[in-house]
Length: 392
Image 1 (cartoon, rainbow, N blue to C red):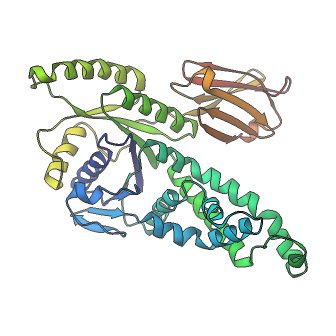
Image 2: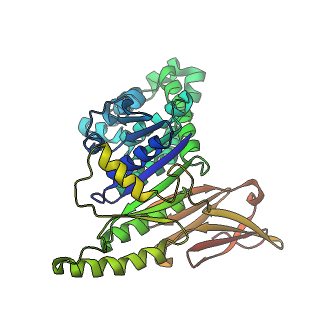
């Protein structure tokens, strides 16, 4: 099953591009599902059709789904949520604050994304296209499986041990409620679901990210940051979509400065995102709503490509042996030394870029070795490991 996630700054036309890609895939014979996980659903508006919480048939080979994040959150997190509220309240935390603390940021969106796992298990679709929330929320969502795993594993293990040994004896002696077996089992199942979802979206042979942008400075800067953070978490970006380009036939003086600005930023995009493929779509003279218009956009974007194909396959992370040393290379385009931090602890390397931190579990070949040096070289973080030296 092929999974394509579309993200981009709010207002760039991400939902329209996702829907157009789905229409194009369906026309090529792929059984295609386009899913919206954005709380502000506009997928149905784009398709000009009623879209439900479960896959809705829109046209031949084309289904759409607007996931209700609140319902998904209640389904996947409610039991643990109730326990955490009781746990925090037992420590004197205000009930409203406890309610907020009991749900990690991003849980609603990630609960929606668990639908990908269900669809893969069903085997019903060839292609799933996900219309994600705007860039920042998407990055939070993609980082969430690691956060949730840490959250659950650190919250429950010692209590699980107590449950096995002597919960009835210990509960009267402690000031916090201990989780029941069913809550622990529910937490375990959620961890397994999150890991299964992470395996799908983290597999570059199945899932890729596509960034939609307009030729505006702020939009391009956000796209560059998104590209960096996606690389940090080892997600593969296989396409940049430049949307709403003023066509050459527009010669009105009113648009002259706008066209000049777009021409300047078009060169920047070409240079900045190379070698990732770039496709462009003109600003159409009519609203891109309904299957006919979306088909027109999809044809314009993918006249030279199969939209379901993996259009770029360069991985962000690799290891090379250099004599007695090993060099871990991590692609971090647009990162700067000032915004980069690195630490090493045992078999984990912690890389922080801006507000995002990734825990990289080192492969076995690097276990027991220490960081000797690190440098950022033209968008590539090179970390050298050896048997001597000191940790970074």
